[in-house]
Length: 168
Image 1 (cartoon, rainbow, N blue to C red):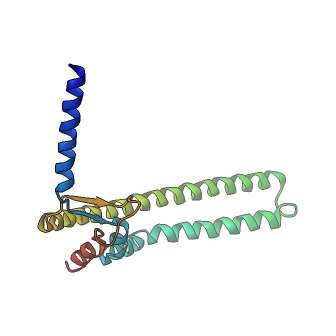
Image 2: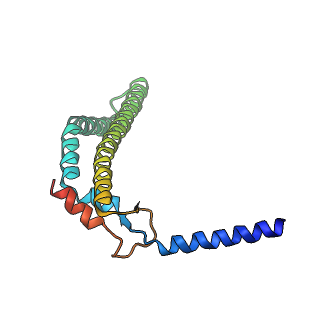
Image 3: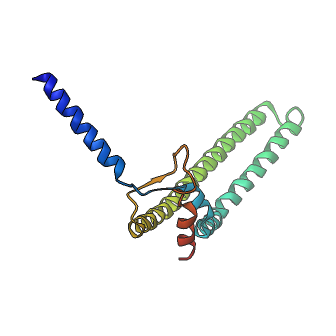
């Protein structure tokens, strides 16, 4: 009984494999990174983000310059003008301002990264929608995105998608 079931299963699997092999699949591949990096909309959004974070960058640069000046002042006056108590206070002030600058820099960097990811995600979503339309209009059975080891020019639709996105 088991032997006959295995034979029937093997025959059924062979028939299914033959029917799958005979059916022509239309497959496409696109490189999402290439498309995103080539889109003028992404470049424009990144310029806007740069302008949005310009005040924070200026504040960081100003605080960095003040910190360097304080460091130079401490080094120059350590053994001459400052008493031991004043020297310790200046050292504590320097450490406090350095930590404040570090936190401001990290927070600004993190916020900028979050905003960049939001922009990229939004554009990736519009690219995905365009790819779906392209696939439906072109009768594709499967579209793969990035992470593909090799895709020949016959299945690579990156430039076609980029042209469609650029014309909008």
